[in-house]
Length: 310
Image (cartoon, rainbow, N blue to C red; front, side):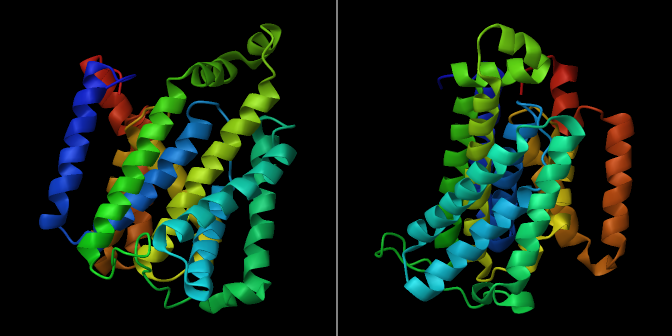
């Protein structure tokens, strides 16, 4: 597989095998949730892990992608792939405007601008008529794929979600290991040096921002079809907190880290739900432990221990 090291190729094949076997062992809807959040975390990691831009507002693109996919599927009756694509394009459109405003600043100023813009999106969704306010957009239909393949069955929809995730994952891997990705890493390590070499760093950061928001919108749109609903939870700041936690727990700047982080966090939320508010406390404890004991995240520490590049 082009661009993969041997360790990455093996890890990817193992991941594909697990995705293929998992729905016969676990609840498909839970697995689809994991894959949606894994793609969301990978999109976020593309920006913070490889460009060094810590956005505090990615929930805006995830949530708006969810809303638009849900609205177009319910009101326009478009097919599943078009609804998801509309979600991704909405994320990219927002990212184009917000990125142009935000990348002019760096560090904490960049983060605060993205947070402020995301809060604007949240209040817009709270008031806009088409979003349904606090009720959200409910009873979103699972429109047939390409207008032909029915997706009412959870297993049928699972394979679509798995394909979307794998395409997004491979796209991110290709971006990271392309000449464009090398410039991204150079900007992360030493932006003045990259500028001195003649690269227009703001343009590279802007494009990376748009790519990240496009994939976040795709993840949000997919989630809306899986659960048949789009709500304010998808655009709330706490959603961004979750994706940050997933990336940190799995390992920033690693290809497989966000996937592992999404699996750990989503699994905790699902299997510890009976403990109510203690789920949040447990997440906080795990976050503290990871920061102290696993500074590079689960995958980052594993890769370092085995001297592999994952």
